[in-house]
Length: 205
Image (cartoon, rainbow, N blue to C red):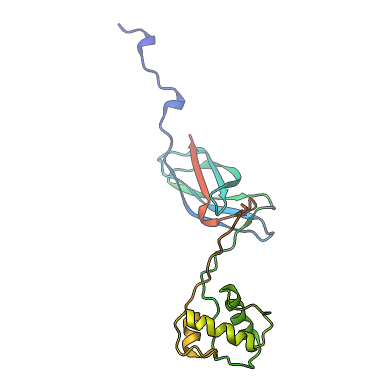
């Protein structure tokens, strides 16, 4: 006859972890300006859970974990779900999305003597490309014209007349902003990338 010491008693911690899941996770900015993570915690078991633990980690665009928060949900019934909200320190904000739009949506032709914001945007592009050495003053002057001629030659836009017509306008309108090559990249530990948020869940019987 086997003694009681031979019986494989199951202690509470040896039970498999309850089946739980998350849905509708969203990282956003609250009305008071702080970052929050919201969603729903689901109990997929046939029995109620006394607690459900939720934790979230905010991550920067560089993949650095910058802040964490946690909360508890009590008495989650079988096959049910409860909403949750995690708050983060007010010094944390969401990083803005990368600008992948065109340089600028030019709608009109520009020639020597033209003025305005369109000219200034053109001058900005020419300066970024290394062709404009003068000021970005919004005046299509001779310096701007000479810079545009050099740009048109590089882009093989013919004729390279120094006038900003349909060919040059359409060419620039489909260009994307080049990403600068930083000499020393700084990591901002106060800006979180909403697409990189990590959320964890654990159910307790």
